[in-house]
Amino acid sequence: MRKLILSTALFFVASILCNAYAQTASADSAAIPSAVKSVTKHSITIGGKLINYTATAGALILKNDKDESIALYGYTAYTKDGETDATKRPVTFSYNGGPGSSSMWLHLGIMGPKRVVVNDPENSLQPPYKMEDNANTILDVSDIVMIDPVGTGISRAVGKAKNKDFWGVDQDIKSVSQFIKQYTNDNDRWNSPKYLLGESYGTMRSAGVADYLQQNLGITVNGIILVSVVLDLRTLTFQQGDDISYVMHLPTYAATAWYHNKVANKPASLDAFLKEVRIFAGGEYSAALMKGDQLTDAEKANVLNKLSAFTGLSKDYLTKANLRVNEPQFTQELLREDHLTVGRLDSRYKNINQDLLSEYSSFDPQSTAISPAYIAMFMNYYYGDLKVDKSNNYHTSAYSAEGFDWDWKHNKNGGGGDPVTPNTAVDLAEAMSQNPNLKILVLNGYYDLATPFYGTEYTFDHMGLEKKLKQNITFKYYEAGHMMYIQPASAVAFKKDVAEFITNVTK
Image 1 (cartoon, helix red, strand yellow):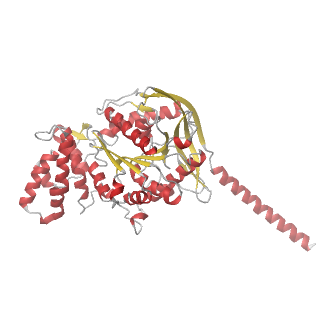
Image 2 (image 1 turned 90 degrees about the vertical axis):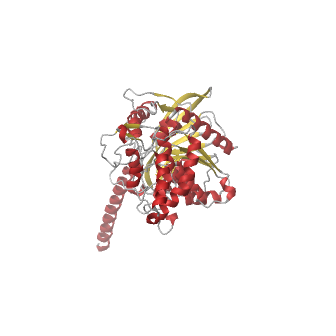
Image 3 (image 1 turned 30 degrees about the horizontal axis):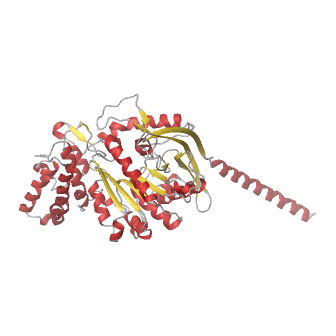
């Protein structure tokens, strides 16, 4: 009898534990949402040819190395119908930057089959906004996958994971790489030619992703298109005691002054003018800043005269600034007498300066001019044309998300990395060295103060690449800003440059 009672008790306890485990498993399972997928059919005429395509919008369930579900990962894919041989059809993975930005800007700016119409570079937009077929999409030469990293779009952590687990240089590189692998596997694109196209911080991401895919996931990409480039954050940060950012920004200051007619005896050719400015920036100006307090009065006066002539800023202002003017100071000062502030993302833009005594600009005229149109039209397109269920809340950025705080450490920079100025140029150099066939297309706007073109040139000149690898890199420039594709002529050139790059590399 005693044994029977004991056995019954053990069975009772075991039943409780099993039920508890089942309930826990059920709860965990309930916390994992289903993948989101909306498939629609469309057509567009590109270069006089009708192209039928499929749009797939939604999110897949991203899994980690332990096969655990960690994120609902959003994307919108455009695939050309009728293509039966995946080895001959490239696929381009594309994203914006921030970090913390959705892919909305590239999506409706240049990559997708629809584009927002803006009155570049004027600030005269108001509802109703307009969207039209985008003849400059690369859909005729490549399938396109627009990626929204965690915290943006409808992407979010699931299961035991937290959004903050994805918010950092290395964390982001890993998760975007995992997404690319999973999309590749789910859609049988293992043997397709593959390209990465990122903008701004997305270029830092691309450098890391290309290397991570190659080193850890067995995936090599054929080419990388870097749009409005920053790989070494030190070139942008204006850190105290470090003069490099002042040097890197100077040619873009000069281009901006040239555009707004603040350069005396304005040269006819912007390209010729900028060649002269580059020589001064990397020579006399850089040497003067390096001398610090050892710079003589005569040397300072000589540099001051040229600096004022190139930037359109007064010698009095530059003297008070000790020859060092950072980006928000420049955007506020250049047109102060005209009661205007110039743009950071695109310095062709200008708008009213409400505080003529302010040292720093308080807003970006370019962002202010186009953001409402992009946001309104994207939401209309995403839930309307692409028919994504409105219960999936699309976040245009992660900046307002709870706990959003980017981890800037990058382990490849050694010793855990500098948490202030990570540099993924080292990743790109490694990827290019280990895959000598990897081709790079670098696209920069002359009027981009967010990621100045001279900083890009400097970074590539300091990657330590073998000379034979330098021929794998192509530079293109546009007389526009950070989002060069919103300028009509630059949009046409962008399409031509990217399409030719993909076509030639894929051969």
